[in-house]
Image (cartoon, rainbow, N blue to C red; front, side, top):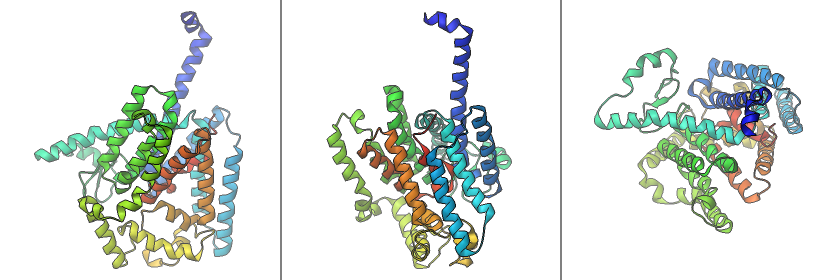
Length: 418
């Protein structure tokens, strides 16, 4: 019967269509990941071009697949953020139209990607397996060559000059972004190693959501690959959040009960505070040097992009205190209203504080509420699992400004895929 059905033209045609949709699903998520984190598409004209190209592509696909009807959650989220930005425009008597359009374009791209892709977490895991494998294919030979005194990067010079992003401390060749200042760190094709760690941590929690739809062997390979990739980033945030993300896999990997897992998760969630409150941090050279450098920037009040996350906190705090509900907007004219001397070089690092700075507590509450609802649906209403996944997302935002891209915005719309 199976061979008979496979030979029928209508069944064969349907199978080709299904395979084509699977391919397009992977392309859609890869495009979303690139415009949200690739070193060439995080700022400037290329970021705008990439966003517009993605919006055009997703619009064509939505029309082709007849999935243009907006979901009520998208309408509600759109309404809240529109109200916030209208209030900002009225209170500042300034309408940054291009900035408004840029934010809503990202919101639309985020929603469109989720609407187009069947089983978004599963496809994201697929894409990140490819990204992590590609990164290790460059990272491991590069580390070996450094150890023996060879230059692994030299053959890529022409490629770097042709397509690479012209950024300090980075040697970008498109598929991979070598670190110059910290050559032992793996950043994949993302703007920095911490960003790679964040996207890989999301893949780890999505792997938990997709476990029922993949084989045990594939699950273990992906688990090992994502964990190894995070370890090679030497990211402070990545090292702290990794045990919490791995706790989601404890029941299957080491056979503990759900109650034991919940106890372990509770302990793991306390680790970040405990870790930073002890001298253990200072025994890790790459962490102690980094923290000492950030403290010096704070002491000298160097609130620039090089100041680090501690400087970022002291930069955002007066803005949040002055306008806690609706924020200051994303346009630099209002975003830097209290520090005009910074011009185009504001501190970077903490994604939660930046989002509150821009959209106020109203915007952050909307994001967290919508994201929690999405995850709760995907976990089939398991509260503990929902809390851990949401916690991982929030903790990654403490380390990087992921909400400036479309991927993290898409988490508000999960669970409503076709």
